Image (cartoon, one colour):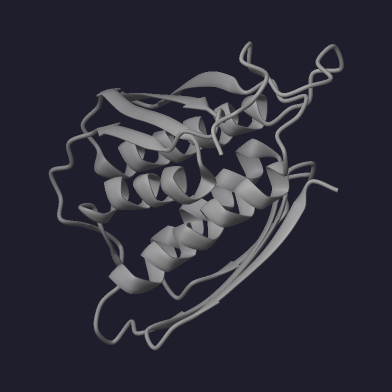
Length: 196
């Protein structure tokens, strides 16, 4: 049962995230931030994860708290769904082109949270989502999902294409890394343990 349900309520937000790692790419996403909904739907569809996200936040202030808390919950859902991480492929990468843009994402589910994010954006916003938040969202996912995440836009011009390529590459890398290898019975580490 590689599924998880995470709830988080603060004075700023109320978030509910359901994740099934062995899904069919079905998404029901309502954050109140249109571009973020689009990216989360891409994440589910290209990763073949079933994802339900319902978020209410202080959007009258700005989008920061809502977007951040969604990715905190998403990271926690990934961590919970992976359980003890036995049998995982563990590491994977994906390159995704989107017209003039090429993005690469590499992940390691070994339990050591770290994020490297290399992407330059020329516009301050994509719809209702500030482009300065994109690094923070990937970082929040890495920290709370206990994964090593390297995301890079290798080249590109259009900021929408850059963000979309990054999320598609993230989805495909996570899909591969979260798969179970029938040859592996224990945790995927020569140490015999993953970092707690």
